[in-house]
Length: 507
Image (cartoon, rainbow, N blue to C red; front, top):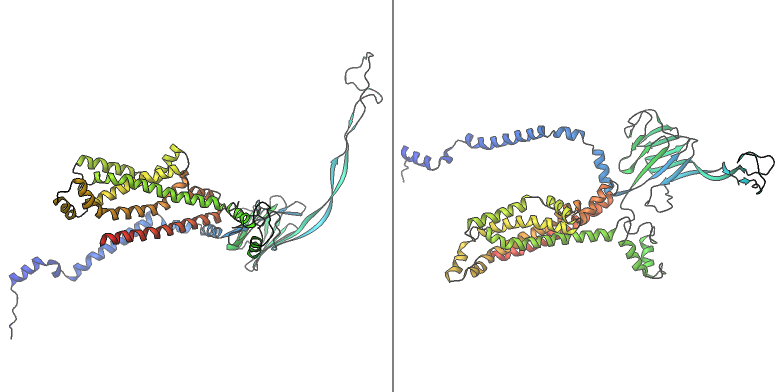
């Protein structure tokens, strides 16, 4: 048997001094994570109070946000029902209606009646003959009234005329099975979600609800307009002399052909037949050429202009990143302490990099837009300046962290300094440089979209113009979707290239 020996007090003290953390009580070990957790909770509570997050969430208008999101994937048809003081109505649609020049949707039913109205119109002017010229002297004052018919007078008469016209006496707008609006005899009757609201209008400026307003109807003050909200289906505004309808439909209207195209309103089968075997619509070109022209120059979606601006954004990001890489590459050797021993040179170049990258790309874009005017040159310059500073700093740090063994090995064979950099340094850092340049190129496609909004060219400016209208949200969604697709494609390309470069450097 082997006798067990108990460690002495001195041995225990030696072990405790070398491994004090192993002898700590479990309560002390658990105290640190608990303090960190309590600190994190206190910080979150303070942030919640300091930024009034509860108040912001409570007062946020989530309905408007939902309406904007709905506008991204839908379009509206907007009949306007004008109500005259006598109760008759006229119906009109918005300019450039998605339904074309003569809209007549099935969901708008009109009862019309022909009436004959008297219209006063001026009759022909009857003019008396002018007095004959005479050489005799007259004691009458000039322009004095003369007896008989020997003077000039205008006799303007009016004649009564009649005009027959069709007027609307009743209009029914059906949104869906649960929602409809009927206008007749100065009464607007709305049915939605099983509830009915009747409003009386005076044909001028007053709206009077008959009963309590349901939750989907709002009126700020008595007599003012009533706003009806039907969710994704649409909405309406009732005024004293007008009913404004906003009926929403899912999808993007006229995405291929606008209302001026001869292909407008035709099914895909009819368009395919016309392109493949139909008679020429335009004698000077084929139907295929005409269809492509109508798609590219679609007045509502402007596909050619959008795609051109998107390509401009891609080129702007590529050229700006390429120039920044070319300039940052030689300067980074001057900024790296392990390559250039002069501390003054290191500090000057590093402070130059700090100056370029400390000013945000957006600010540079504003500056160059003012200097060069709106266009891609301002965007390229903004990307070039910002990325020169950032890439220069990253490149110099990569140089300072290289393995000196490879460089010392090249030096040991008596190679000149240039050869030392070429064979001892570049093979280690070139994959890193290329990987970072590729990442910045992919990132700058997103950045170029943002700086384009301030006039630096590209699709960003067009996107900002669509947002400012506050009505073309489907166009905004279209451009955002294109940007996402481009970013996804170039992100995949950049990741694949970086993986190959880093993989090669690891072998």
